[in-house]
Length: 162
Image (cartoon, one colour):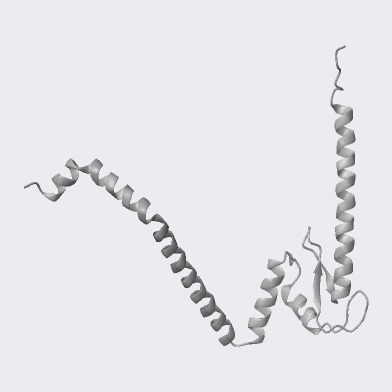
């Protein structure tokens, strides 16, 4: 009787064909099992992270780190002293643009350069964002117009033969 190694070598093609056939038969079942395992794991992990966040002590240091992290995620490039900027943000009681009292202050910044423009109320932030987007649209259209004019002048004109 041949050993298992000799049997595998002698019947390699037949074994591979059987494995492929089994894989095709059970493919959908395996995919569904893998998806359910992943979704269960991710839901359990999300719940665990939520629990950790709720249990984390709400110290000033944690709040400061979270706030600065949020600013960085939203595209704010902080070149000046971060501690001074955060203290200015915490102590700000009125909008730096309209000088009205604010309940929730926002860090206004340029979305293309990331430059901090000031601490403002929500309505001023919306107005500034609208002006920025209008300005960007105008600049885009002007660039397109001038680029098309430049291309019309530099490219040879098409000539059609009669």
